[in-house]
Image 1: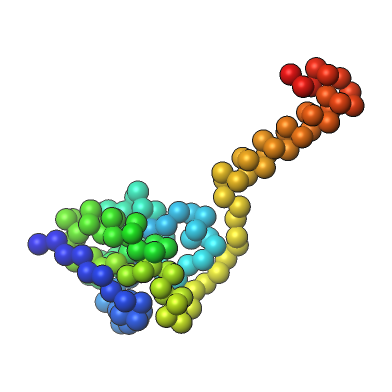
Image 2: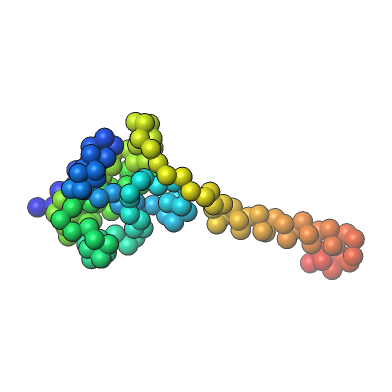
Length: 141
């Protein structure tokens, strides 16, 4: 029978340290690059399945799915539990992990793609407005 267990950060840490569990980060690439749990493996939410976990060496261990607050990890765990049996979810996600005083590895902060597009579009509008004023009114078109 499929079983999804919500576990606290201390329980997840202890399970991972005892090598009976493996932390699996199911967030986006940008989120994972910015901050991750020590020793965790990265597997995006939409790619979580038994075959991928086995390819990553998660055999005979309880996968502990991790996201920012726990909701994405719980969705992935419910789908995965049908294939694997026992799956754990870090209750409260990385937010609670940090609140409980456990360490994270921080990486580079990336500007989200949506914001990059907005900055690019705004810059182009400003450029063509200036060119329309200084060079030719055809740049307004």
